[in-house]
Amino acid sequence: MQIVVLGMHRSGTSMVTGLIHRMGAYFGSEDSATGASAENAKGFWERRDVRDLNDALLWSAGCDWHEVSRFRPGAVPARARRRFDAAARRLIGGLDAHRPWVIKEPRLCLLFPLWRPLLEAPACVLVYRCPLAVARSLAKRNGFPLPFGIALWERYVRDALSASAGLPRLLVGYEEVLADPVTACRRLRRRLAGLGVEGLRDPGREEILRFADPSLQHHRDAGGRRQELLNPEQLRLFQALEDGTALDWEDGGATSAEARRILAREEGRGGGPRAADSAPESEPPATEVERLYAWIDKLEEAYRRQTERYRALEEAYRQRQAEHRLAEALVQSLPWRVARKAYALGRAALAAMRRGR
Image 1 (tube, rainbow, N blue to C red):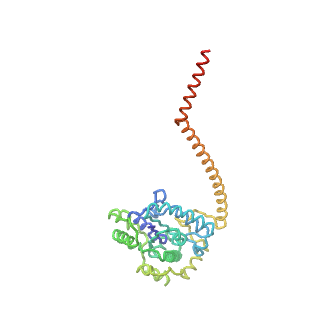
Image 2: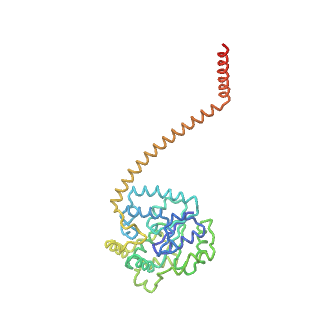
Image 3: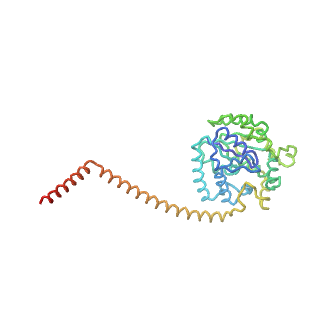
């Protein structure tokens, strides 16, 4: 099985992915992962290649992880889609040698419709957290207003529910994991087995507790302010996550009108400070991306021609080697040795005759 962890930024996806890896799911080599930082001491448990592909898709559509009001998977240019398909197929092919494997990257909530057709046997783990706690974490890290953080949470969660509909999937609450990491981890392993994921084990108690440290939670659920800061659609969405009924929905539903207005308004203002886990300080706009793609196309064409020339030279070299081996075999063959001996004897007899004259 191919385990895909979906969840909004700052929702506990790193912790859940790390636990699934400790159950035995393959993640990748150490150098393929984004390292730990002050904001995520246990590591992000994100593959850099997955994130790079996701960033390229969003940027090609003129969007970013926090600038999503205009984003639709269909807005990705055809050229960017082709590049993504080729690179993602290679990545997935490498992972498939180590099933079951797990990937996680919050942008997958938005982009899973582009990944899903490339996966043969996906199972989705949807991780959720109180939207107010998520928004407070984003406010501290990025300076985002709370309503903006909540609106982002709604967009990501609804997209994840819609994109994973019809697949084997389950819900995991971040607060539930932190409240009792050992019980939550073992329950998650049983539920993954119920989805058809084989080859996982229950990590030891100490192993779980060393990784899932409740003291690392800095922004806790503030239920008293939910009614004040969440609109009715957002409250219903969070309740459906809590009671599990969201898994019964045919899709995640449309982002609420209020959230759409907030997303558009904040993006118009620049969206606040750039996130620590977003793009570099500046990324090219969509038009510049297209120019870069054209430049890359030229490089790839030059590379293709050089590769063809190299293969032709390699084939010629193989032919010369074959001819050389054939000549060596001929020299070592019995008829050739007999002929060479007869030739030597003939020369010796001729020399003797000349001396006897």
